[in-house]
Amino acid sequence: MARFINIFGSIIVMLVAVIMGLFGALISMLFFNIGIIEALTLIPLFVISSIVVFIIGLAAFIYELTKKEITLKHENNVPVNISQMNKEKIVMVCSKCVTHNERDAKFCKGCGNALVK
Image 1 (cartoon, rainbow, N blue to C red):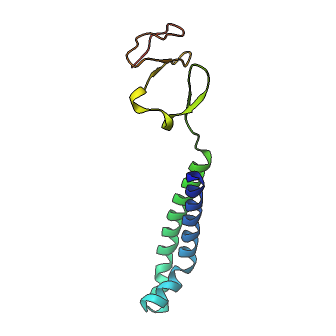
Image 2 (image 1 turned 135 degrees about the horizontal axis):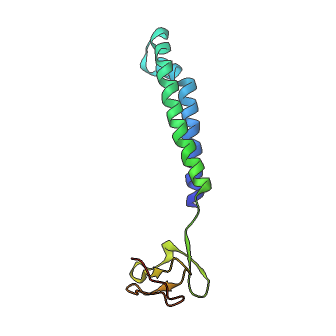
Image 3 (image 1 turned 180 degrees about the vertical axis):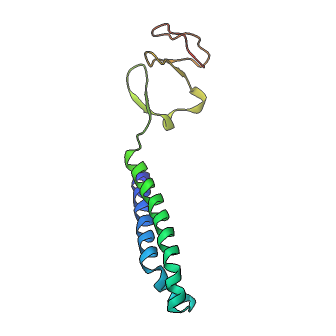
């Protein structure tokens, strides 16, 4: 659900950027009571700022679509999301065989590889 909200939010940011770029001068004429000449001089500012906001929204959108959840596997090969792990039970994971070892272990109990802290 959070991923959907992040994707939806980034699409909203992109839409706001387009509206800001297209109608920024018109909106400033209506709400700030400035003339046409002054509003036309603001158009480059609105276009540049809307492009920047659009790129930020697009980057957030692409990041959210390509983001992968990090999972670990217990000894019985059951995937576990890192956010579900209890922080007090953090274990050393062997870089060679991905076996979970005790926190202060010096060698892997699965393959005997030296563990790096």
